[in-house]
Image (tube, rainbow, N blue to C red; front, side):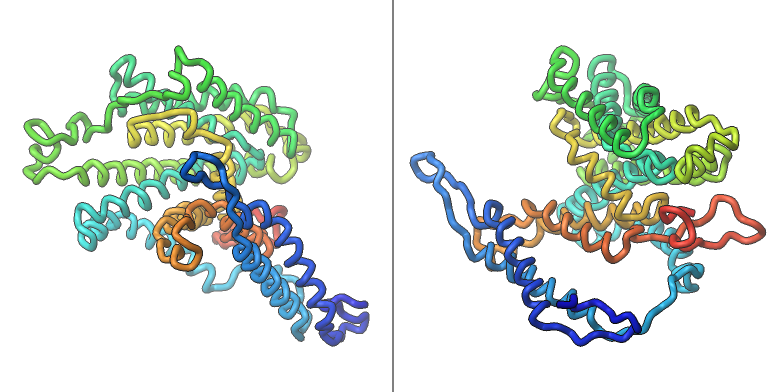
Length: 460
């Protein structure tokens, strides 16, 4: 029997086969129920005698299967709808898309500049602390990390699954230098970037001849090696206990303390902990903008052209006389340097670092931000970070879902499941990412955005 969404050889739409669609949706629901059985239907909890008791939640499994059944049936109906054949879209982006891309960056920057003061005005010092810290600072950290990884993955085309290692190098560099030698954050910040770039070069040398999956495996191993070293070399990193008592950031030497010599006393303000949080927000915003500025400038320089040539075709890149060894090493080093900057900021913000903060899931999250936003797109990476990291924080606010699923339900625990489904949907809907157009590095007379369908892998 023909599939519901098959067309005849003459191009006419065949009648929709409801029975076949129901069988297809039923099979999808059955598979979903099988996958949901050990995850949703069963839960181990401790009773009063401190023993594990298996709790059954069959309704959750039924709800998941029903959602999949309805969703699959809706997809089959949608694919079987009458529609005319359209030629492949090879034209340049529309005027609306070009205008949106032109004004979204200035509008976003203006919003970020006033965001702390708007939050302070709407929520007060106590309520705004959560918005500035959990949403503003946390999202900007991943924006900066995404832009740093975008150099390696988006521009140079080198798949890196161990980017969190450079993040850890930057964090531990500041933590150890500040606690051991008493160096300030402003001295340790460039040192952390230099040390992370050095480790990026060390990683680059062994993988010069690797590409694709092999490169991904080696970088993944490198990230795990760094984490295992931090765990087991206790004399150096204090192991799982981590490093505490890391000095807080100062306003160029002026501490955020209450009393004589503090930031509030210097400027005649009433002391509040929000001052330090606002300063941290603008500090990470400045670091992220620096990452973006350097990336855009380098992309227009010969080294940036070499990265893009390497990404498109390494053999052709060599035939043009480009030194692929130096090209790969510069991509790894610069991407690692910005990861080190972000790690140093993470340490000064938290005041504590441990190996548990630098697991593989962090690398996967950063890579997901780059892929979801559109590899090579700066604006796309920023939007993806807002969606993924901001969405994670929003899930903590969904307390009303406990009225539906019970008091034991915590929506934050299912954030990776939700994002996994969202990523699958996104790859089906927009396989080239949120922003599929690219601004060309080289242009004649007039710079025009290029459709992702006109170039290999959606890059321009």
